[in-house]
Length: 173
Image (tube, rainbow, N blue to C red):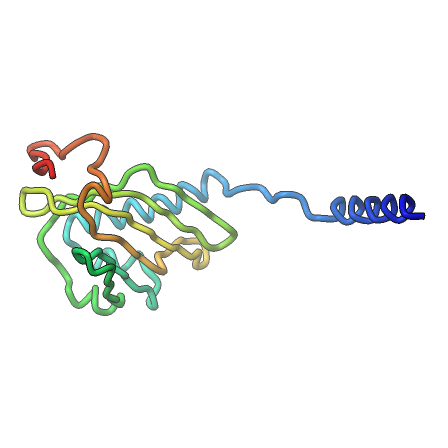
């Protein structure tokens, strides 16, 4: 009787597994390209110092979350809205280079996680991680959240291509 119960349990479990939905197909190449086009455009506008154009890539409720490690005191962050970003308007151009993005897409949401380095005023500034959450609004992708860390090596690294042309690497620590 014990073996019969075990067999029935096994068959019930197997039947239950057979009714589970199969794995859904991943995002199309077109979807992945559309998401990365928004991310690439965001970096372009950041580099040009055009925060109004950057905010045009975002939903009205979007927020920025810069987070940074404070020497031995743990992390801190600030929150900026799209309206505050738009009010800033323009600022000095910089060079921010993202690389090796990891993208996840599920239906109408996407996230892109990528390391970056940043150069300002002709020299090394910092590096960190950019994490963008995007939502599909109609047929276009828009940024809903832009979180990034502000760190120094060894917590993060310079772009694999080395310094931008004309720049020298930061001193070793």
